[in-house]
Image 1 (cartoon, rainbow, N blue to C red):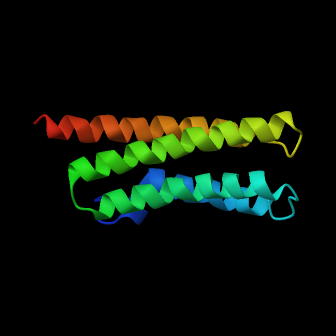
Image 2 (cartoon, rainbow, N blue to C red):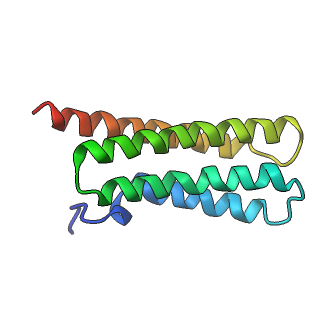
Length: 119
């Protein structure tokens, strides 16, 4: 079995962030608060998009930079989910937990990639 990461689709953080985006799109399909819905969807899609773009830059420094952007989008998404929860737009508790886990995974990848820079 080959565990080598050759493309961004092989990254677990990318896979998890795509799964989260799909969950949110599905859950928000009938949401009538178009402003918040669109913000949530944009933030959610931004996470895997930045991971993919950074990976395909073929530069460790660029990948780290885009991972930081993805982590920021994850925080933005978590904030929007907290707002959605407080206004009773939809149940978000599991989704908020997923953003926390995803953010931690992204940070671990940043730390790992930064350690490669120091070698």
